Length: 105
Image (cartoon, rainbow, N blue to C red; front, side, top):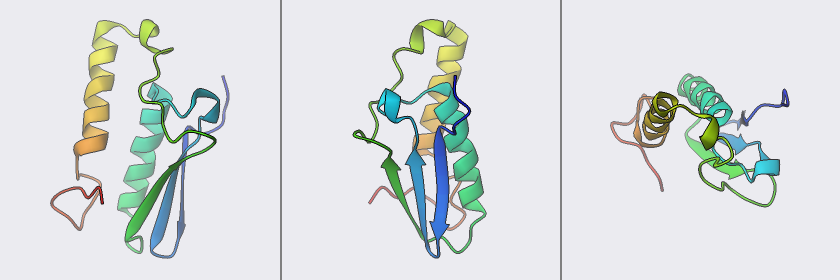
């Protein structure tokens, strides 16, 4: 296992860049990725100067989807918890203090 972050957040003035950092797994969404994205989005919510965010994937793929290699290691409770976490990350505006709904444009 590597100590490299699963996602990184940088900002240049009003533009943030959130990069998925698992190119060896085509940036598949794992538990580590969920933790990294939660932390990055929480940090982003405090960056008042950032007005737009570019989401990118390192390497050849943006994101392959769920990490199927990780799935057999999850108990049913862990799988349900992780599914709920992804739902919250992808559909919640809790990180955006300026908007009542998320923007995907």
